Length: 519
Image (cartoon, rainbow, N blue to C red; front, side, top):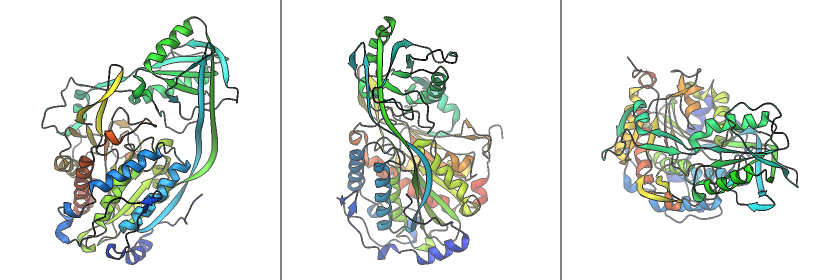
């Protein structure tokens, strides 16, 4: 249910709200977040105009506070779109942003067909089989489950309609591997002082195969499989809690994931015609989830958007909102005249339901606030450490996960993105071109991250920072060991300076696509 009235941000309304916004010096620092006192003291010193050019690090949110928020988010675990855990986190972010001095905080309702699973199991040859997770949005079974002969299939081949009726399909999802040379072909610039991005170096991720998994699952629906088991080419610790695909499309073939070793056992069982019984208890309900929006008034009524999403399977995916609270607490204490543009804080729902929250925002505000928006900065997965499978277990490598900025072919955006990567010493990292075909976007392409719809649907010049660790789409795993909190803070400071730089750039320059290939 929506908690506050929906109000469109017209120019007149923006000016009214800006005048009435709470000044940071007048905000009483409340102590509660997710039901318990904050662990760290917030900085509240006065800031001047020069602090809008170079961030005063002593006046930025502490690493201790960022770490405490991360621990809390780790304890929450999966924030499936529209779930109680997700909506409580949105409420906590509202409280934090209010304390930070962000004005006109309000929710906007987004309809959603929510799918939640709470119990699943697998038995083969009447013996229990350990599963890694369930396949999201994969329907549900009766209480007694579904049963049938276990059949190994190649769903990449065209399966005849009804050919798997009454059977439980077993199929494999191989790792998708790319070379860093592939990324290099898309790069405007790379920050790689230790030459870690070797062209022949391999970037292998199970979740990169989402674009393969979706047609596989659709194939099984057409074949009317009673259920399915997807074998991930991963050790148990890396397969645990796999949460993909997350396009929000319900498919009536209940399914589970298993790891590499379990998959080998199931292939042997399938060869003997063993019977399988799969149970998946899940509920589908129409609900309203929420976008959270606020304003930090600037000298003018043009906007820059500071954006991330609030749902996700673990605390790295996504800690962008926590970084944005820290950034907002700094920005709200700057003199209003030092902010050439008003900052809109936008925390969207539904990233794990096909991006429905950001799409709803763009459609709703296409004719009002988006017309006054000069640029957007979307932030996801900050401070991630590399954790890669090595044999039968995964280990931290001692390196940061490779950082990536996606940006349209605007030199103003690319230069600002690269400067932020260098300032934060995000080693290694790159600024990449959009490469996902999107016919409606100004340059015909988008990218695979939360900010893409601001560009492809809203034509807003957007820089989108992400990392893509192996564990990005896993729930039920600890991530406190996978966070470099000092790096997260350094990135948040650099991204604050980047936002201030974008706020000073002429709108026409931000929108000029002057880096087109061949130009």
